[in-house]
Picture 1 (cartoon, one colour):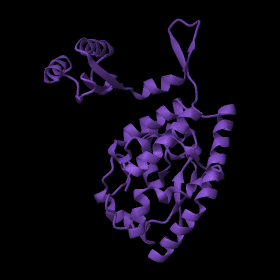
Picture 2 (tube, one colour):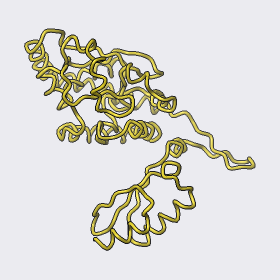
Picture 3 (cartoon, helix red, strand yellow):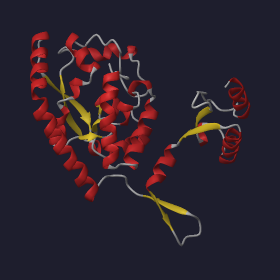
Picture 4 (cartoon, rainbow, N blue to C red):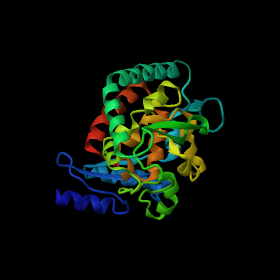
Length: 290
């Protein structure tokens, strides 16, 4: 394995990549195109050289490559052109997704009502304030809505955020602190297992959210987005998504947005089911949750 790594490193030494063991072979991963500083010809040569040494190659697509997944070839013109279709769900796709959302969220409310009651009692007894909290978020079409959550913070949390900005541990526009002093003791438990998110099934029933989709951002985070980030608002925001099953806070914000783009461009009901199935193990493993 050592010799394999050394040969691969010589072949792809210009890459910022990592090596790992996989069934006795080497593996390299790298971003593409402009992200690497290579043109397409150089990138193809590097891939060919890596394959010559039995090195597996994984390439992270650029944003433009993700956009082309919904592109349609236009014949009969001088240069090869592709028309990029809008990714918003419509017609039968919207009907299938909406029906799935209603059935599953209704089931969660009925089956989970005893758990909801227990959480509500615990919150009420642990600190003063309401059981539920409507967090203003940005949703479909960049419109505001009140996202439902079980309250996990003290009542003065919003007023204290400004003084905590310098302690922010997240990249890009996101705001996250691992040991946020505004979070209550019971709130930490709820957040660890994402139980504070359960009331969002009400937003799903009201048509403001979907079970799966890009996560809605708080207004504070939304105001710091770059223009290219905002394509994520072409679909309903979700309770869970590729962020949740891919490490969440362990990824950079631009990587998270690219996951949103991938979801939007490749949506299917089976992708939704797959993400939902992976969400529970991710929650139990507490990956990126705090």
